[in-house]
Image (cartoon, rainbow, N blue to C red; front, side):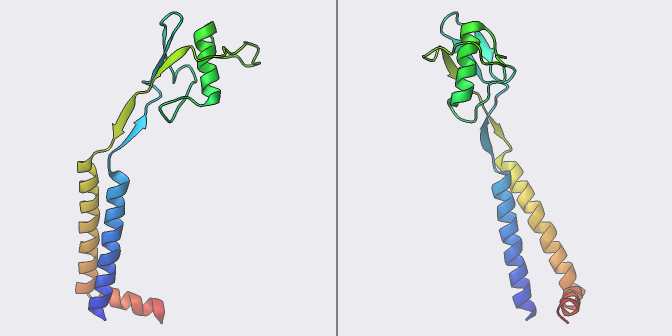
Length: 140
């Protein structure tokens, strides 16, 4: 019984450690603060974040595309009443900037620390027979 419980606990600990590894692995995201558009008309360059244009992909959605078109046409981003005419065709080029967050080393360190702390707790509980006492209290 004791070995079976230890096996199950180590199995769950391994699953949790692998999940932590997946969570902390490196990933790329579009950085709106560094991405920019360049207008076709005057080659003006505008960063999209400060101009309230946002994207999560390599292109702008319809709403942000309209804001970018107005920005290049009228040099104005805050058309609150939507009075300015939106140009029919895109008049800009979008240059997304990607950043990488975390690293493989971070993921390995976090998952290793989590596993070793969990394994230490399991060993201490089983060496002092505390775990079986806790189980008996819970299930009795």
